[in-house]
Image (cartoon, rainbow, N blue to C red):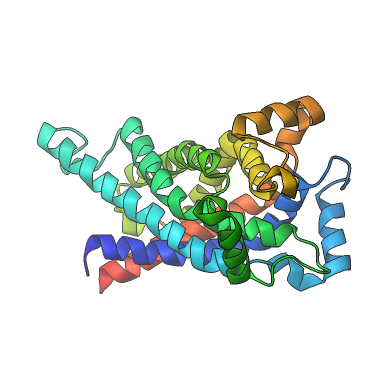
Length: 298
């Protein structure tokens, strides 16, 4: 099995772990981001309303799409990340830097590897998250879509591929900036741990993968949360003026939200995100590291 195939497989394991752990928090975040100002007094009010009105299974509404899609997304992330890291390591080795094997990458190289991973991921994550958000925010009674495949079919038949990729510009911005920071933070922590103890990557305690993943997740959301909020607004907006479209473009969305709701709107729903982040991101990196170790031992 080639290194790339192993990376993609391990990434899939990480993605599945991320969805199963993070989905209940994500639906609360999306509801708070997209609801009119004053709908919820806080995240517990939102979560309580979902539980009371829609039942416990509502917290996993729209899970099939991300379970399949995010598995692919995280697989792509780690596949591109590891490929980019190997590319930079080979370049370093030829130039006599980055240690004997060139694997001690610079901050710029790690950030660039994360950006490449994020952009590649965004091609898939954009439509996956769009469909998930449509399902998460539709009413429990008389829903517009019966499920993910019904949503894809209806949106595509009415609005074409552009409808499926609604909000893609802001998605790519979020992925590029966010994953540059995300993987830079995680890899620097891993480098620090290996150097501090004089050990190889596969010898790092799995508990540290969870802790470093949690820290990387906080770094990610500290940078991208306002961008993510705009993405959610764009992906729940109408497709045309006759469908109740509020925003003409990403920039128009930013201006409108700022003017009508103030700066607080850009951090609405941050609470459940910060609670979700250490669990979901810790699970992602734990799943990836353990799967990588297993595959490399075969």
